[in-house]
Length: 557
Image (cartoon, rainbow, N blue to C red; front, side, top):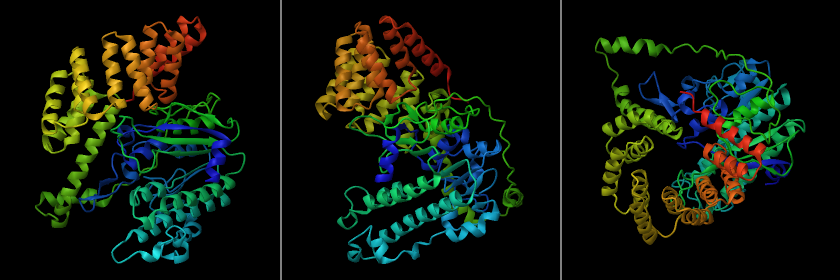
């Protein structure tokens, strides 16, 4: 992938902390708005359909926060977006080719004056020739296409990528612009269709799609020109699940950027999805908009912003006629039998949205707000084990240990061999001050499951509570040796080393934690204490300032 390699070699790159849950429209709306999902309103892949009473793919109608390109357009900057999730129907303020352009839907291009130019750019899957698809599936002649529809599905994925690319290149070449955002979903969809270990016939598909996307990337970068800052981001590693049981480490995405003012071959640490929009605004000299929870990434945007955005005035979207007409008809006893059948689907979608909202709140540390939602979900859907698990976690975070233990024991009684049994009981024991019980639970887990980073990190927490600093340091080092990507293990090691008076090592461990997760105020506090003990007063003051800022920067309700 030479074009991606050039961006990495000539700019900065690093891991990108993602958000939960891993729902694509939710995540990419957080990227484009800089806000958590409870503020931008996109919580699922579907939304209620006012016409049928069922559901439809999520649209801009559900979006409650402005995209970054609309904020820039309001400031007079020519902005455009192509293919981005949750942009249909296309409307002001920025030029927009919506995510439904690839499906040929009306209202997918704004302004409408661009339709004669852009609509012919849509590439239909049936336009692929056998020779072209053969490049991705060299053994395609062995496929029984009457039974195996994956080749046809691959043709659709590739056609959609070509359609987005054609629209993007047309706009980049024909329009004056200051900012452009282009979104491709081909990599993730290909990995879902052809996971690792798929049939031998399809073994070259994923690598072929990546090479194909790299070709498209190269053309976009060339059209952008040498004076443009180019940012490439993924919300997570394509095809990866939300949880890695062997280590307890969450997934992350990738970020790289190149352009004027960006140092070549550099690394960036501690960036997350919510930092992308503030960074884009910062490149144009603007401070983050109200409600944005992230920060400008220093390695990409080193200059402090000097301007403030004007209040956003979104265009008005008229209510659909069906929203106004359906209720009076039902009051007179008229019902739509088809819509009634679809209501079950709508109710399932509503359950999913509430579950996602509760998880979004919990992930922000707003456990007290998430608990009523989880309680309603578990009362109405007792078979929804995930909701019960997260309710127990919310109880734990809120200090409601008795309720947490009751939920934990009920779940473990149903699944006594769960990998999480020793970790769950150990967390409860630590919270209740029963440190010896916690260590006993974790020791049993090690015997059954082997030494895993998640277990070692919790062992370290237990030793920290018991003020057994050497034992804590050893446990955290073991966790780091298994998986060096767990920021909490580095922070725990730093805390143990600081207590032992090994200040230089503590500072280094705290920096390791901050590189992985910048938004850990405790790590900044430990770093400041270690630096102060080393006589580095100025650097310590900076660390304490960062800790104070992060502590104050609670999510906006």
